[in-house]
Image 1 (spheres, helix red, strand yellow):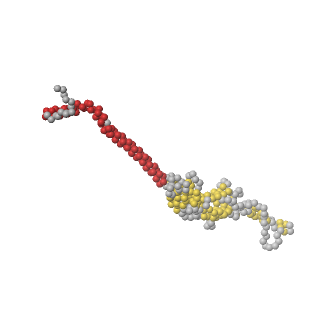
Image 2: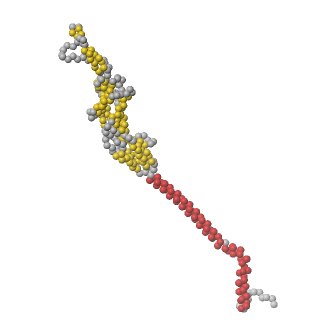
Image 3: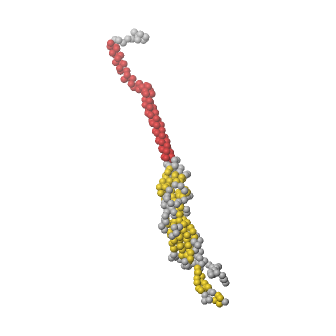
Length: 303
């Protein structure tokens, strides 16, 4: 019973959310009821518990959430710029997927998702997300002297971004919140494939790949030294062989002169008559001229 002012207030408790209830209100006087007044009311539906946000492109976000069990449920998405989008015509699946289009890259957005039942909104779930910046631009490699590392350099993108994720084969992801990243413990004169993604919170931009070569000068210098050393060894071998040939030739030329006296002695017998002829002719000429003298010390001939 209510006695007092012109407005009567009564709270109906222990109801379920998102349900339409029918009521009848009677006026009672002296124990007698009126014909009654029929009306209905809807309890506030539950808000979505959680929204998952994924990046489709630099200008689109995809949100998903679990659908309420009640029928005749719809949703309203309110943007931070106070525009609202009604999400209806839901299929029978338990998961709702909705793509938010026409966004700017590298921008943070705040949203509120309402559950709507019979025109009554829930309290709403607030969430925010950042669209990915445009992919990395101006990417280039800088070599580190000695070939033990590389330096990646890129141009700072516009919009909101929290860092850059760098992927290299055989290593875990590396991150940098600047416009350069130095990679160490690499091998010289070797090609490396690198992939970069801009990070905007949990959102990644489209990947950009680059192929970088570590400094090969140390390897080239070592190879040149090896080649020069091999050439030196070859030249040294040729010189040694040439000297042996020259020595052998000198030895062969020297052998006839050393054997000349022996050969002369061996040939003396055969050449003696030839050499005696000129002596005999000279002797005969001297006898004919009477110039030949006897040996005074020779024994006298017998009479």
